[in-house]
Image (cartoon, rainbow, N blue to C red; front, side, top):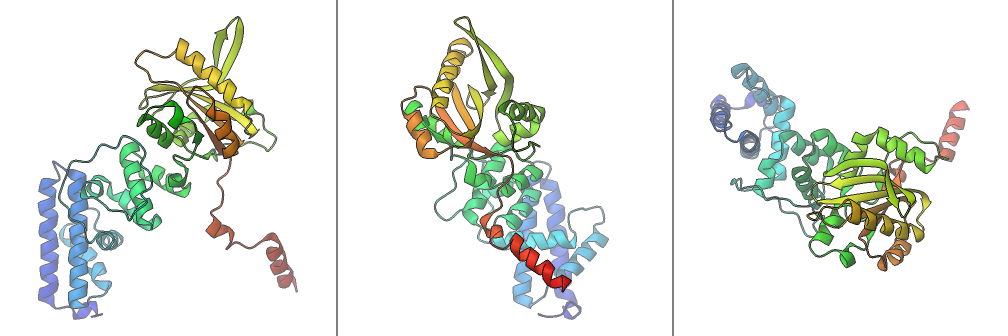
Length: 364
């Protein structure tokens, strides 16, 4: 690589002037399309730097000088620090084959499935994502198919950058659409697929502080006490209706653990919380609750009520047999109070015995 101090003055000046002109030009267009123009600008800057580095043999030091000079000559402009310019270069190299032709963003009607083929990154999706989200995705999601899934999920759900980080860390792409259910048997297509992709397995309630001997009512109380985090884990569209929702049927009192209305699915959702393993009789009780809600609460324009049974151990085969003869659409998912450690980390961490041996060795 050619040292920065050996870069020909005229060549570098030309690069600096070109980037300055692109920045000024982008500012004019940004009034109408701020985010897409910013993403386009960053991609073009990364493209120019990459091209010059390959052509002239410049090293990373040129980015330090470029950031310094841009700050001096355009002091009012933010976002052109050395760190961010390096991100622009990485951004271009990730999507170097992209043709940034603006197109209307496709309407995403459901959480996407993880693509089974090599991911393609359409320009409309790239240009629609905020820059901070791109930085997170490039850093944390190396697999392109998985990254495409998160891109589409951000656009559908409106996840902030912090929520995106949380979803990645909890491996959301592995959990959506995994619930055991009878939706394919009880709901018409494409509604069945839409509902399936709305539910997760497992749900992670790591924001709760429960001892191992907790009761179901304690779980329910804490979920409602942390309702904002609970709704975030459930996913976009859930509106809280009530806890221990009272049903008066045949002179008997019944109480639904948690009742929601899903604004996008346009239906009520009954959630029952069960500690321990799934039992077949849970499906019958949920079927009863869904029938009552359909009769007493459901508006004629609403779709059929959905039931979701949350338990600590779901036993997929048992759940599928239990749901097969049930009339109402019901899903069964597990919930976890702590996030499971990824397998790649499990194998790399020392065991208790290894730690004890290490400490014993130091004592010697």
